[in-house]
Length: 282
Ligand SMILES: Nc1ncnc2c1ncn2[C@@H]1O[C@H](COP(=O)(O)OP(=O)(O)OP(=O)(O)O)[C@@H](O)[C@H]1O
Image (cartoon, rainbow, N blue to C red; front, side):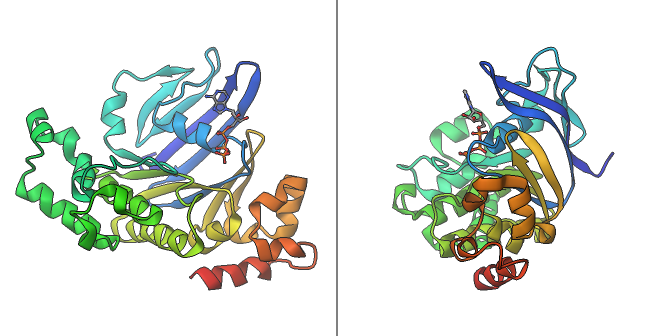
């Protein structure tokens, strides 16, 4: 079990009377980079929010979530020591990741607050070692030259890379990225996904990234877990997700998942359709 980063068993979540997650089980090993794929409303955000206890599973179910070997929740009850687990897991959201009026470096240093005395955060007096760590993290994702700019002056993709830097300063062992490229252009998307892939490969950080288009999963994530209407409908090598397989899984919703070119002729453009897109974004 030591090599399991995320372990979800029998997760059910209902909002009002509408089921959002239905009997979801999955395991992610430490050091994996996994895409969580699904059309809008399939349950990706809801699942990610359960993993650090922002959502509670339905009470009275057997659902259990363990992260890094510690219980996050069991049967809808959040573990008492959730804060200790949260400090080892970082979340990158689709937007609103940063405090816009503060310099980028201060946003990145927010990742260190969990191990510093309160006064340091309030006065923004960070030890030299933390500053060095922030600089290294920003260099790794290619935004060091922007350190003293206000966060609001950064492009969407640069903001996402700042959020990834903050996760590194935090010392996160897992990054949960919730549609981090949903509002970005293809070039900015590629840079953000590349940054996630780099920290995964170079630092061994486990990455679970939700995406609603399969081309970026294909280019960056060896494994994909696909959700449809709250259920896991596929869990395996991303390369097995051909347009034909996606059509089988998603029916009419397939248009949301395919890149535009492949969508034009899905039935006559099999596996090679994504390979081509993958090459273009690589
Ligand atoms: N706080 C909430 N209250 C009520 N319903 C919710 C809530 N959060 C999510 N839902 C519902 O749960 C279902 C799954 O939503 P979720 O946001 O997890 O999907 P998603 O795959 O992340 O979609 P998107 O790609 O649009 O973000 C949807 O039907 C959604 O309307």
